[in-house]
Amino acid sequence: MHTLHLALTVLYMLCLAGALTLTVLAPGREGAKATITLAASALAFAFLDTWMRSS
Image: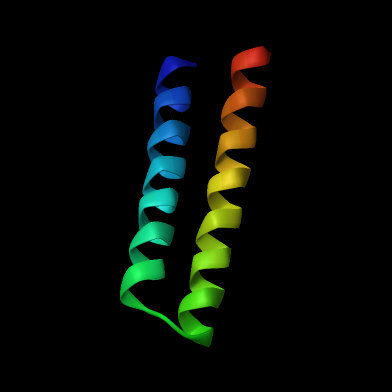
């Protein structure tokens, strides 16, 4: 369980870092789409992480 929690934490931190990086490096429509996708992925991984901790 601890390993899964760690893996989910790393995944959503990487997604957030990617979203922030794309915000700076890839302005425009394509950058916005990628940023939104990564931010949504980060939220999903954070939700899974919280759910796994509570169960």
